[in-house]
Image (tube, rainbow, N blue to C red):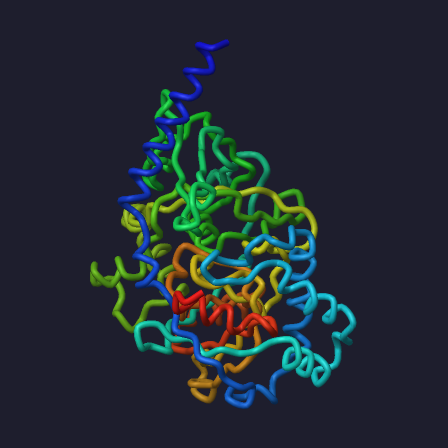
Length: 408
C-alpha cells in the first residue's frame, strides 16, 4: 500500500511539474498588462439603447439565471480579478423572473434599474473585432457506411485537463490539456496526427459525416445538428479539445495566394477547399486544434455557460477577461452583401454565454446567429469593427473598477 501511494504521489508530482513548465511557457501576459480600463457611463450614452427590444435579451438572461442560481453564492463569476460573485447576481435574477418577457419597455426598465454600464478600453483602444458563428446542419450516420466515413470523435480516454486556477488565483482562466503517457503528461495529438490515425482505439466515433470539409467547419463552430441517414436528427456539442492553439486557415489561404486578403469568408474558404481536394487536407492541417464531441439531447446548442444559446442575443467572449452571463451592449455593423444593407448598424443588448479559441482580447466578440441559411450567410461574412459596454449588477461597479485598477 505504501509503495502504491508513493508511486501515485510521484506520478502526480511529475504531472504537476510538467503542467507548471508548460504553463510558464504558455502563460498569459502579466495581469497589469491585461487589465481593462473601465469608465462609468449612463444608459443615455449607449447609442440606440431606447430602440432595442431588450425583452429578447431578457429571455437569454433568464437562461443564464437558471445556471447561476445552481451555483454557490461565493463562487466568482468570471475571472477572480474581475471582482463579482454569484451572490451579486441573485437579486437581479430574482427580479428578472417577475418581468413580463414580451414587454420591451418593462425589460428595458429592468436593465436600467438593476445594472450599471461601463465603457471598456484596453491600451487606449475602445474598438475591436466582432465576428459571427452559427449552428450548421450536416448529413451523417451512426455507423460507418458508404459515403459516411469521416468520424466525429468522442472524448479520448487518455485526454487530461488541468484547471490551473485550482492551484492559485494568479492562473485564473488557464487550462492545460494533454495526455498521460507512462506517468508523464505530454501534449495531445495535433489535427494532422489524429486524422492520420494516431488516436487508434483511444477515442470512439460518436457518428460519421460524409465530408471532411463538413467536419472541419463543425469543429470551427463547436456544435451543430446532424441529419442522420435513418431519417432522424440529433445535435452534437463540444466535449473537449486537444489543447493546441487555433489557426485561422483563411490567413493561410491568403499567404498561399489562394484568396485575396479582402475576400476571406467562411463561404469563400469552403468553396476553395471543395474545389481543391488535393490541397485541402494540408491547408486544414495548418489548424492544429481539434474538437471532440458529445451527443446532446433536447434543446441546443449549449454555450460555455451551460445554457442554450439564443440566436442574435448570445455572445461569445474571452472568458479570461469577461465573465459569462454578463449583459453586454454591442455597437457594430451587419455584414450582408446586399448594397442597401452594407454598413447597417447593429445596436443591441447581448448576453455573454459562450467562448471560443479564436475569441481573444477584451474588446472581442462572436455573435451566435442560430441555424439555417440566413444564419450561415451572416455568420460566414461577419468581420466588423465595433465596441461594447458591460452592464454590471448594481452595487458592484465600484468594486469592479477598483479591481481593474488594482486598488482593491
